[in-house]
Length: 122
Image (cartoon, rainbow, N blue to C red; front, top):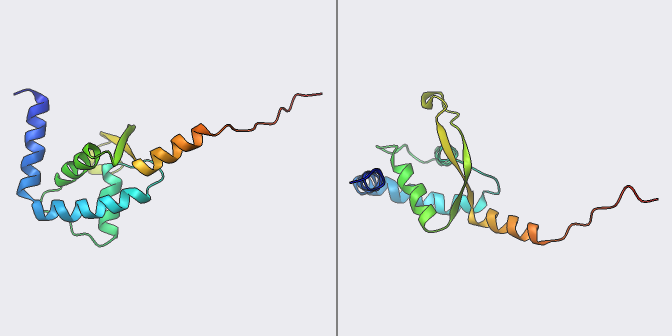
């Protein structure tokens, strides 16, 4: 097995061993990402889930399975990386994501021709 297959198997195992937590978080995330009109990370999703009354899952790795599911279903898209803010994570690199809705809004805005006044006319 290569690293990609090992990672996929590990994520599927975490998901299957924590189906209740997975489904609760996924249900929250499907609605939450539609309201995000800025980039976010797995950390952001986790913090918002807790702030909205979500209970910490037995295995926190289940968030990776949720993010992967959202990405496969094209509800979110990679948008770069940033450093983790949680001190326990020691500033490791995190993928930043944007929602499908935000991506579509950006594409729509790019399609408009902006009218920029020429300040250097005489």
